[in-house]
View 1 (spheres, one colour):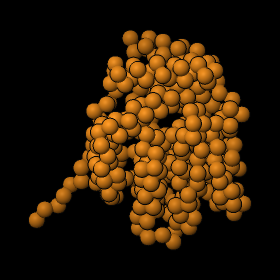
View 2 (tube, rainbow, N blue to C red):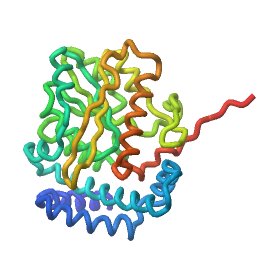
View 3 (cartoon, rainbow, N blue to C red):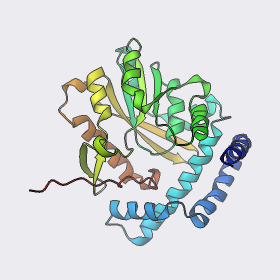
View 4 (cartoon, rainbow, N blue to C red):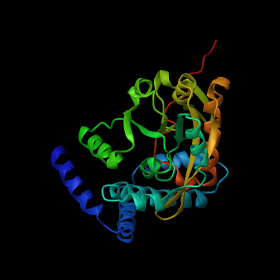
Amino acid sequence: MKKIGYYIFITKAWFISLLPFRFLYVLSDFLFVIVYHLVRYRRKVTSVNLTKSFPGLGVDELKRIEKKYYHNLCDIIVEVIKIRHITPDQLKKRMVVTNPEILYDLFNRQKSVFLAVGHCGNWDWFGKTMPYITQHKVFAIYKELNSNDFDGYMKSLRSRFGVPSLIESKATYRSLLQAKDTVNAVFLAGDQTPGGLEANYWTSFLNQDTPFFVGIEKMAKSLDYAVLFFDIQRIRRGYYEATISPVSLNPKETKTNEITGTYVRLLEKAIVENPENWLWSHRRWKHKRERVTN
């Protein structure tokens, strides 16, 4: 039955990906009614996350952000499906990097770089756009999905046009060591929830005690990769801008947790300025720090 459901989905997705954008967003509006009002997808998780993150906001403002977030989420769902038949020209028009000269300079210096993002805006479109704005060899780090079928489907979308090259998260460091003879730009999200022993850096983030991966920092120091933060914001429906902020251009000169801390503050600022733009239905705060007592 799961196989049948999967083939029904990819058939529908194929036809959806053929739709012009104006009809795509009509479908997104219909999907919002289903996801928000009927299925009520993770609405409790989203509501709790928003309430704890913005304790100073009233009920009406929190509800406005919540609804706007779900509208944006439905847009992202249909936009990701659209990757199957989107053209490079459409991508370059709809995902613009405002200050790519930082990347140009790093490439001219033959400096590899980590492109750190949060789950803001359309991160999948951003990953597809990067090969068109930099001469670096572009890699994208991904985490395998539980379903082999849907994992294969997402990989086929993300690797369309042959770029970026995909690296499974567990093989990141080993793969980059093997690619040491090329000048690389490695795209990865730094706001996923670490678990267990991985949660070794905690800080206040959106008014809550929050764990973060330190993998980007450790790899940047070991491989001598620069680290850039990309703030991906929706400027209007179907159009995004990404603005680069340097996190560290010389990682080996930084103190412990300096790179991670700088990334966290940049991400927090981007979310506070446009809260509906982040992935609020993610269970970001499911882990609690273990307190050592005497």
